[in-house]
Amino acid sequence: MTYDSTNIFAKILKGELPCHKVHEDDNALVMMDIFPQSKGHTLIVPKAPSRNLLDADPAAISAVMPLVQRVARAVKAATNADGIRLAQFNEAPAGQTVFHLHFHVIPVYEGVPLGAHAGGKADDAELAALAQDIAARL
Image (cartoon, rainbow, N blue to C red; front, top):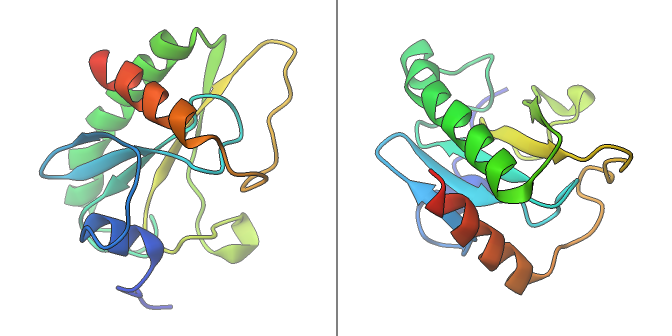
């Protein structure tokens, strides 16, 4: 499989589509997942084009992983989550739905089951407020 430069994350990175941005630097864009599995579900999207972890440049992965850790800490603090699940899917049979490398930071709350992946669209005002709260903790 090859990288498709017209995928939704590539369009967001190019500014062609909007997002609830949390943070952006030279290596990645951090944004809220609009179809969250829990309150505070955040995505880290490396800017380097790759379909997933299997074809990514190791240097690009190395550059983004410290940010993944920082985002996980900020999400946990902003949401008062009991734990954090980090997910990354590779190819459709594994659950990948957007074919651009990205990492999910999913807050987990004791006794609250996670929603289905891409189950329902979140409220835009809530996502905007969460994005600001998480950004303030980075």
